[in-house]
Each structure stands twice: as structure tokens, then as C-alpha cells.
Length: 98
Image (tube, rainbow, N blue to C red; front, top):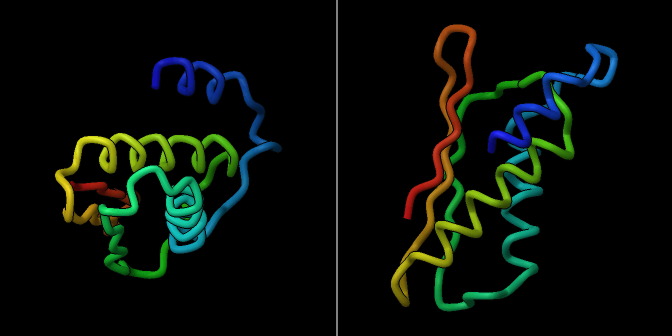
């Protein structure tokens, strides 16, 4: 995470763009499912409000996939990983829970 933060700090504002949170989450969930490492663990997306975040799509995607992979790896057989987001004033909070 520290490496991702350092890379992000070096990026210029032109490389950052508003991205829909629902699409970011959907893409990351699909990538985690495609890996198929733990077919015995379900992934559930709890839709949140329409929201956008500003950032680098590849870095955000990588961070979300990493969180999902960790949650899947440490879930018990038959478990469910839930991904949700909420909007709080000027911030979006994405949660990944196992």
C-alpha cells in the first residue's frame, strides 16, 4: 500500500480522472472471480450510491483486487466476501469484508 501511495503522489493531475465506483468495484470483483482460486467463497456486491472517485484506474483496480484476494484467501470454506461503498460528504468509503 505504501508503494501504491508513493506512485500515486508522483502522478500528475492530468493522469487522474473521475471514475464511477460501481464500475471499479464490478471490474475488480470480476477479476477476482476470474482467478478462481477459491470457488468455495462467494463474492457479494452491496450496491451503494452513484459516486465517482478521482484517480488512476489501474492503481485503484489493483488495490481493490488485492483487498479482495486477501479477503478470499482468509475466508472459511463456504464463506462470503462482501464489497460495499458509501458516500460521506466529499469521500467515498469502499469496504471489503469477509
